[in-house]
Image (cartoon, rainbow, N blue to C red; front, side, top):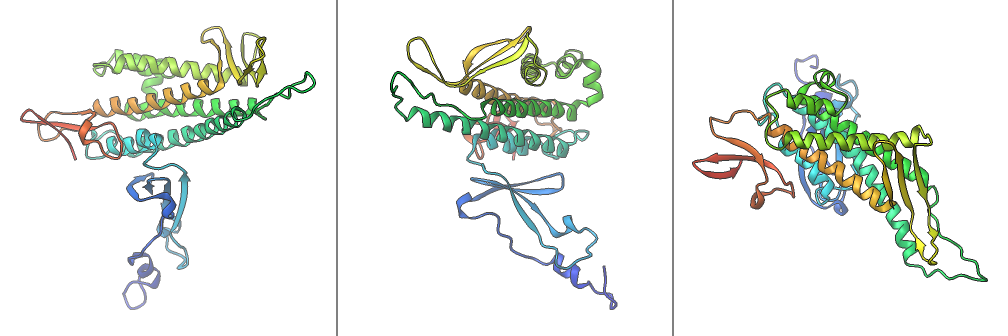
Length: 338
């Protein structure tokens, strides 16, 4: 846009001028990294993650001078969180234009990992809220009065469990979507049902190397388990349901913390504390997503000047807690690729 004298207009000068933007506050700690996903800039601080939208993102036609740049917190956890390290920061390290083969849409891969993060963080918040309720009860001394005992409870417990399972199901669906970015959704769906399609495709292709194939089978099993638990909630039947029990008293006069059992013909789960149930699924989904990123990246590495390159744990050369990165072999010396 130009003014009548052929120079830049006022709005162009405003948008193209240098400026300072405050992202969060001191309580979030230091800024450690920035990554672009879906055309948006994400600032990763020690204790939070922010999305930054420039004025041109909001008003690309430059019609208003008063449109500001915006900063919005999207996660209350940052680089010090293991979740952020194992998901978002790992994705930023592995899904890079200069490291992956040209046909891989690395930006789409980053976008999918962001969706996984959203659901895992939301599920973690449910888990932590439940843990806080347990901690409060454990801190109290329960005493029967007049042969009666007022049992503690977790209000809305079934709804909490339902929300948690739904978040886990959404996350594992996004894990499948991540595989689709690299192999194509049509290809995987043609190869088999849902995550089995990845396993079948690997078996029939050149990508069935090392531990990728057995890992994909375990990932498919996890997906089936989570999906079946969700079916127990959304489509309950006599042989497909959840049995959720709040605090109760056993025959030994001991307080029993909330439990859950999965009744299902193919993927039953014995009665277990809900705390352990949630912890198990969170860990399995995070490990599944993290390792899938590692395998996908290692099988789609762009050549680097004829030197052998792989994906592995650099151990002493880790960055920001990220466990995996690109390693290059130069004359027998293994070094992290910058």
